[in-house]
Length: 464
Image 1 (cartoon, one colour):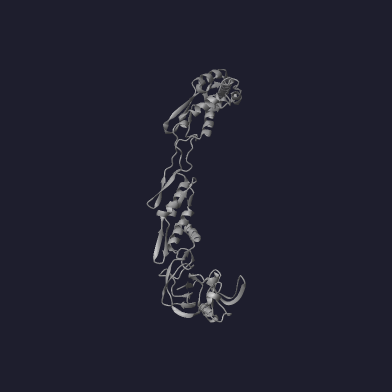
Image 2: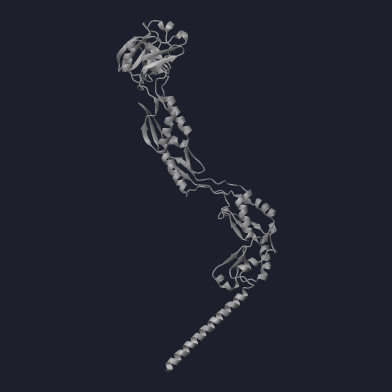
């Protein structure tokens, strides 16, 4: 029973002591709260000035002393520094601006929270300064008026068959609009230093060695110069590789790679000049036994420059390593000798005679009538080829219309065809009663040629 009494007394004592502690703690907290009715919290900062636990009435003096020695230090690249002093821009405390904003934001009964976190405040227009003086000081800064190095994107250098990355240049050119804005902000907030690099006051390169786009561009460049295109012209070849291709590549400010279509087209044009044979002078062994010189005409090899340029650009973009023929508008029989081969139509204007050879064998021959030279309709001379062949055609021209059975054009509207209204061929008929330029042949001769000839077969026209 006695032990029970002692235990009850102990519990009452503990409760009493706990109550005293709680009341004391509350009292102390309230006393502290009274203090913060006219003092700032712990860790309070106003526009860069530490006013922790300072009286509200002392703020004017604190700000005044702060402004006497205030300066903004500019931390520039290469470790250089400059300062803008408050006195140089007539920086003053705006006394019309009160502390009411901060007072109302700091509830005196919630002061305990300031023990664990800082409480920075910014009051707009707390400081006045002469903006024209600030502008003048900014313009005199060495970082703006000194020697300026422009920023430059990462670049690429071709060497030994591939591209290497050339490191970017950061330079020291200031983005003045942003720079002035940041300086005004820092001064208004009373900050002691401004790191130009961290606040992005410099104009920096858009792409650097660490940019994802840089690696993509390098890979694309290396794919392009890895292309090796070997053009085959029967026994001769022309090879295009990175040593030339890299000179055609352009990289813009966004690291986009383009291939100069003009340079590619020029390359194909040069191939055409070297390997096209349309209109070249050819030596031809005539059926009469004489050697004649063929000049002009449309027969021969002719590269399709536009189509081959597009194909070449595609080959480069894919990094192709290939051997190919260029795309041709037309081909000759071969590139050997006079390129005519052993299947052709031979027309001797002087003798008014036609021979047709197929695989080296004479298939048919006979007299013909060609264009009238005395009326300006002479049949064209040179090496040509059959454009196509058509059965049952109607030829029209100034003052005539003629139905024919076998039509084999080789130069525009000039071609070989049958004529049923003529009873004689050969001789000098063509000089007084010749055609408008076509080669008129007897029905049997035109028929034999038509049935054995193919599109593209050479047509040789010459005078002795």
